[in-house]
Amino acid sequence: MPLTHRSRRKRSTRIAVTLLSGLLPIVLGSGILYMQAKRTLEQSAGETAEQALQQFDLMLDNTAEAARVLLPLAGKNCEDVKLALREQVTRRPFVRSTNLVWDNTLYCSSLFGQFKEAVNAGDYHQGKLWLMNGNPVTPDTALLIYRLSDGRGGALTTLDGYHLSNILRLIGRQTLLMLQVGDNWLSADGRVHQGPLPALPVAHSMLESERYGFNVSAGFPEGETWRYMAVNYPPLFSLLIFFGVISGAIGHVVQKRSNSPSHEMLRALEAGEFIPYFQPVVHGDSKQWSGAEVLMRWNHPKEGLVRPDLFIPFAEHSGLIVPMTRSLMQQTAALLGPHSAAFAKPFHIGINITASHCKDLELVEDCRDLLAAFAPGSVELVLELTERELIEPNDMTLQLFEQLHALGVIIAIDDFGTGHSSLGYLRAFKVDFLKIDQSFVAMIGIDALSRHILDSIIELSAKLDLAIVAEGVETQAQDDYLTEHQVDFMQGYLFAKPMPAADFIRALSDR
Ligand code: C2E
Ligand code: CA
Ligand code: CA
Image 1 (tube, protein in one colour):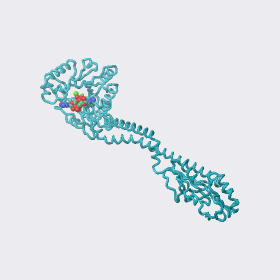
Image 2 (image 1 turned 60 degrees about the vertical axis):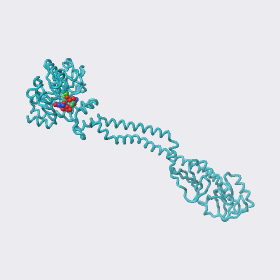
Image 3 (image 1 turned 120 degrees about the vertical axis):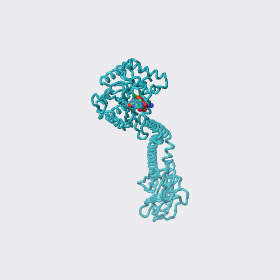
Image 4 (image 1 turned 180 degrees about the vertical axis):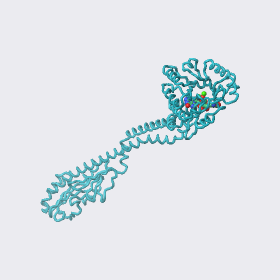
């Protein structure tokens, strides 16, 4: 059937949408966490670089101060000043050695006293700092040399690379931290390298010392953001997965609801897919058309014409049957209204009504609207209420039927014989017609008991002064039997099948 078929067809889309709605919060949340982790790492790298820069500046302040004190001694005899050189080494933290220069020659050293070595100012970054990979005394320990010069004289003070790499290690910890002086740079393992710094793809932060012109670089290797998230965010990830599951479930439920039969029928109602078919009802004696029953069909775009017993139960369950019936009545009015002149007066128009349509007085308006479309007196509106679904007599329903009668509407009990309507019920709602259920008609000539019930119904209706319609008349034998028993009206394939409006109107005008 159209309702279940449709949901099966859409299954793959449903699964995809469910997955998407589940993944959405996870992906969005992960994106936000990723940005957050990136920001944290950037902040951390920035702070680390800042701290290291301060420490290096502080160390170099000591080294530079020693050079400033010694500079006036440049040019003096080494033997006379070497104690002053050693005093600076002893008194100043971080200072490893001090040296005096004259005419670009290192001539006096705190370590060796009298000495001789050429000094090339070009080795020094901005003429001030030279980061070197050890010297002949300590070939494996990095050195940072500070140079201060004035005219022909100069002072060189050195800072032990051990202190520098210590800072890189202690402050850096998880961060990759490097000290760069000109073309050379020092890594946390204490080694001096030449050339460009290695790439720091994540959260790279570089600060330059205003006083000494060196750089400090901090950052993280590739993939650090994900590693950081994996270590620090597992509880948040669990939360995201939880939200993902909830969101997926909501997506699933919402789709299920929008794929529900009632949703599909609402769509069909709005698309005008519920259309009326008309089955003529004939007079028992003359077999002239006395009217027609309006039967609903679903003109489904893919399934074609759908029989009402396949969708009416869903429509009743969802409450859509009321607007569907209203639409059917409006279409009937629009289709048949203009042809009222062709009716053998008064023409019966039978509409099937469910009990849920009788919950308020709106039905009166629906009937009034339908009748207004026909020439006055040309039609009699028959409301068919099935006996299987009895209406509870109360103030509301009694008032409703009172007003319907005042409007001239005829009440028929449909499928009579299959339910339990009592005499009191027939009276309370001022029933005018009984429509004998087709199962009794079908048993004519076959089953004696059914025929007995049929006879009783015919007899009862005569006593109660109720008109009778026999439904489902298919054979001549049934017609003969019913005619013999003076059944007022007949309906069945023997006379005509339910047909679309155009056929019905054509047949009507042919008569
Ligand atoms: P129903 O009100 O008893 O309608 C008579 C049903 O018997 C119709 O079936 C009609 O096509 C069928 N019928 C007529 N003559 C013969 C015959 O000689 N032999 C046989 N075997 N069947 C015959 P249909 O149109 O399939 O409708 C089935 C039921 O669906 C209706 O039974 C009615 O209960 C419900 N229905 C149809 N339209 C509406 C509607 O607009 N509103 C409501 N609430 N129910 C409707
Ligand atoms: Ca009916
Ligand atoms: Ca019936």
